[in-house]
Length: 78
Image (tube, rainbow, N blue to C red; front, side, top):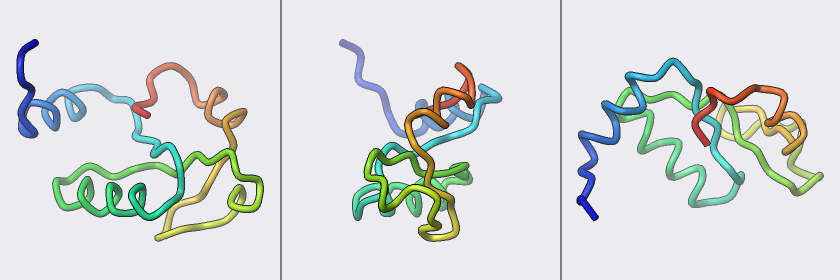
């Protein structure tokens, strides 16, 4: 399998018009949000199955349910 570098992956995401949704609203997901933002990739929201987190904001992003994620359509990067 070809090794995919970070620059290649970032270009691939930027070349697609789909928005980024982070699956989960935990510590690693928040860290991922910061790492993406430093590379110019802004996430739309978090998606978490824990009902207590849904409808709340973490690090400036809303948290949605998996049902709401499906409504965003197929162009989303998860």
